[in-house]
Length: 95
Image 1 (cartoon, rainbow, N blue to C red):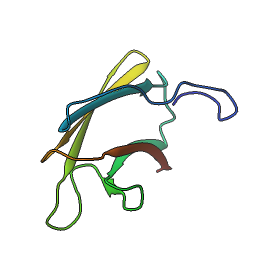
Image 2 (image 1 turned 180 degrees about the vertical axis):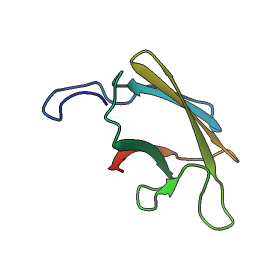
Image 3 (image 1 turned 60 degrees about the vertical axis):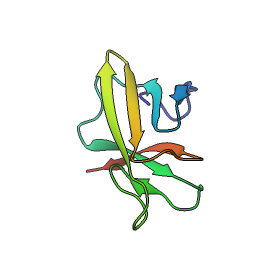
Image 4 (image 1 turned 30 degrees about the vertical axis):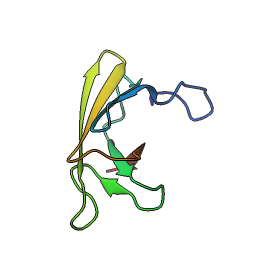
């Protein structure tokens, strides 16, 4: 989230949900390395993880839309149906 791995940062915060739309925020480096790409995934059970705009065959999907202002990214995750549980994680890959 924009800091050295040995430095503390608050991670994901400001989690708000109504069962279908979930919003969360995290710190964002103002000048992220150009060879890295961030992504978000969701899970209904912490065992099976799905990328943005996908889900289990015949099941719900979750679309995540990030918006960055300054050093904070707010992500709005919208489920195709109300979910009993929703777990979110952020990751990064090197291009």
